[in-house]
Image 1 (cartoon, rainbow, N blue to C red):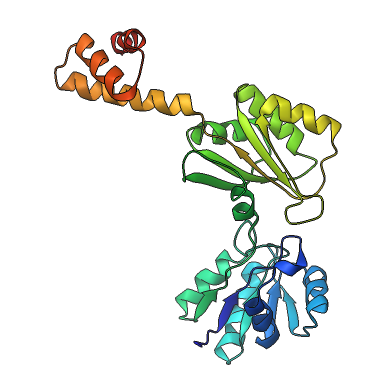
Image 2 (cartoon, rainbow, N blue to C red; image 1 turned 45 degrees about the vertical axis):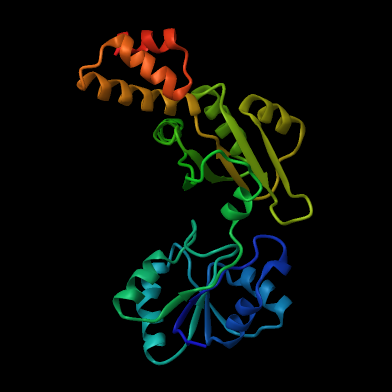
Length: 270
């Protein structure tokens, strides 16, 4: 098996049984584990009966740790990077370190494993494969609305906390009262729950059901907006080809199963 100097190792997002044999072997055999919170990682290591040394690596010290980790790796030591839960570099520290390690030709590999976004999406039926993941949403209403506007034609995935999600849902409702959303909480744990409905119904549901645990959420794409944008583009293309309004409406209605009169009105408006 090929050996690497630096291993990016996912850890369980809830259920401790979700760690892979390869991850266990790696954490046991490296010299050092860089982790967000030593107390959190130590609980996992104790469960797995692993006694590898841990060094803290979090958003407040990640820049100052880079040179130290580089010196350890260049001296021949092997390292693993973990986050408190899930796959490192997904809203967790690691990007700065990995960038510097690649600059210094350190051999890096990533292990497959637990990830909240993938676990969440695998339980939701979506019409298209593409989606946008934006991590944790910003704090202000205007910033959140800007993100909702930017990704209105794409399934938008984000993390949130129990004390913020209700306010987030109210902002989504105000932005688009017809929005469809999905909320996932306590994934892989005993009280795992995924709720999928229109935003107003989800708000009412969670007014009666206490929200606890880490949350992954999705705002479904706005289909009508995407279709209108595409239709405008097609109308303009046909106009440039010198097709008349009636011809354009007939063509588009036939191709996309649209109402001919409604399409004609839209052509006239453009």
